[in-house]
Image: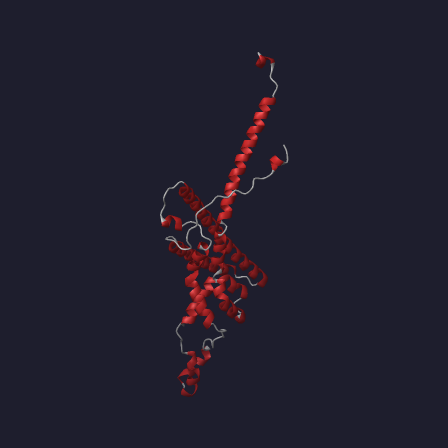
Length: 268
């Protein structure tokens, strides 16, 4: 076999029609993306609570791995969506070449480079709004006064001492900032765990960077969606390689049959 016959097949591409960044399925896909984010946040919270690592190196490494796994899941899911969208565009292109009609909504769902980013952004938007609000208002948390020691309880009824102890009896309601902090910290739990609950300056930094951190899954999703055309090229190239290999095999078998010497019986 010559070196020429062993050369790989050149990448095979197919033309396809492009859709729009937003189509009739965008809202549903964004809602599904948001649901996945919430589910992952709850699971990560449970896993982080169960691990409870004291060693900072192991804690940072484990949570960094969690972040990578989440991003890879989003990236992988988006590749499938992008590949499917390109395949739809190829079908519509063939129909267009044959003069067959199709609707605008059918074309809209085809691949568009921005579609993955738009879906990820819209799915992250509720968390992003909370993160921005917290980042603007976040302040370094301080330690509260704690609970009143039991041996001082009897002095609360004495006027000369009770006024000084009144701060221990006042219970402030939960504030809007605290609600935002709970939501955002759940969304960026791996980073919160990496920093540690005792590192108040580090937690403040995480809260101020939270708008960027909550967008990481959306960026991974959009980047994975962009691989749709490349994945379709791989599919077409693989099909072409299979056809070429089958044709080579048939040629070898045909040459072998022709070169095979005939026996005396076959000659008669």
